[in-house]
Length: 363
Image 1 (cartoon, rainbow, N blue to C red):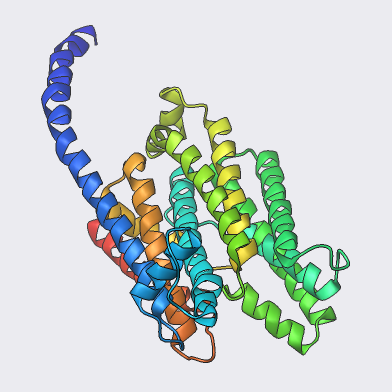
Image 2 (cartoon, helix red, strand yellow):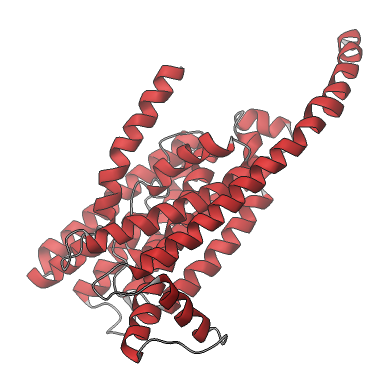
């Protein structure tokens, strides 16, 4: 054993000096190119998406209005058109980008932590809990008007996640127990939501709740953008700080523990972080599925499996994806709006089937 270790040592150092060191430049260059292209594509997507709608607005108008509100000049648009850009379309488009980025990042982290390619932000029942909280506020009037839909959804999401943590800890805390606990919580809160709607909601409330449950970015404001953006930035920084740990989880929790990772503590920290982000996003935009399920697989094909590069690329891909999905949802049947979750499902299901098919061929 000792002789083998001594014989292997020169090869390892030589690989480090040549193979890894020599590959560092191309890897950094590839990462820089992906970053640059992703940011440019996101900025261009937001600028173009804001121009699409009944009122004809150009990219130059969007820049003029944005610059004026940032104190860099005066808008050349009328107050009405300026309001359409800055108060209606811009916050909605930016929130779509934030939600897409956040859901994709959560999916990437959860798939790595749970070692399950089918894991997404809603596997822990967070979405179902948020839906129940929102329905309780809207239909039952809990809070007497002092509690908003977003607050109720956030509280419901936290309650659901707390139940998942309690169940998984009681059952042993392994990855499969976490997933099963999430499925149980999801079914429980979905049943509670259906029960409240069926027994207490009128036709108008039922329609509004159903639209929200399918995901909707209509009626959002700048406060939603700032809150969700702040939670996204904090979550992304925490996940990037655990990038090497997430790489270790790819080899299994036993291998990660052998590498010095505190498996239980790390899993709790990252699951709580992603659950809080999911709760914030769902409370503002409703339940938008398939983003956290499909986008991580697409991002891995571009950036590889190293999480230091994968997480930012996944965030940019998710942001660009949901910006265009929301644009399609609000314009394809104009003046009627299609729930964003319906469009993501229509696009996500075929895409996910393609991912499964390619995975089967590779295997």
